[in-house]
Image (spheres, rainbow, N blue to C red):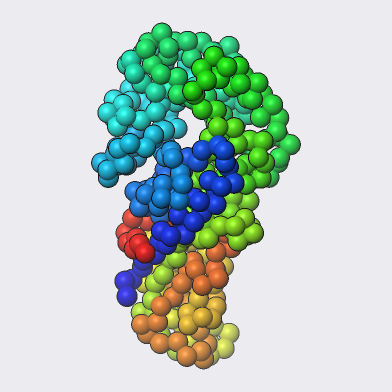
Length: 355
């Protein structure tokens, strides 16, 4: 048993992609594999998603696009959704990635043949122009430079919790995108993320961009199964030590656990350097031998402690921090965050094992 391991079920990713592709049809499915596939491994996740029916991939950076191409994913379109500096742009172009543009000056400087997606900011407030006039000027600058207009896009800010605002965004984007498509019939219009894909067919347009749902997590943060999704990741460690604790004895930095009666503790060699957030101190459960036990004491860099009482737990037993009924959504709720952050936060020193 490794001190910590993330097990990735590639068949689950393939099933999730197939479900999303079916839900989105006739729109195409773009699997978002940025941030190392949301902690699952970008290349294996991309291959599984493509096997399930995805026909596009999306990342955030030029380096991520290069990784996919180097792994042999040479024919599928890869969209770099993030901003590209002057230093990063050549790498994205070398990877034959589709580029997002929203300023005429940037588009005008792209080499001929570059595949460009023009981004309209309809309410997210990050990248993209809020002006349809500037978006049109960007489109014209790209065409004048000899680029190919591959798509027009926006991004929803509230698809997981405020459908009304999402529809307001769609009402801004859709007429503009339809007018552009009338001039360029082969481009793709895209706006929907996972929550929009699962929640509102009107958002599907020509292409949906699904990230969190590809990995079997609920974009609404509650119940993946209710969305027809299968979680693809387990985070496991093992019991490295078992010791008895008397009343008044403590465990961990700051003595944030002090036994109020004789009990037993199991130490697991996994900690915040592996992605088990310190905010889970006295605030999590671990599954050992099919039973849940409370994580007690401060989460340290390399170890956590679990109160096992008189349960028949032994050194060497596997311990699940995600899996066995403990979901990324449940962990996120304890941390007052989102499931995305839970899996993205699993560090590189935790090996990924694929099945």
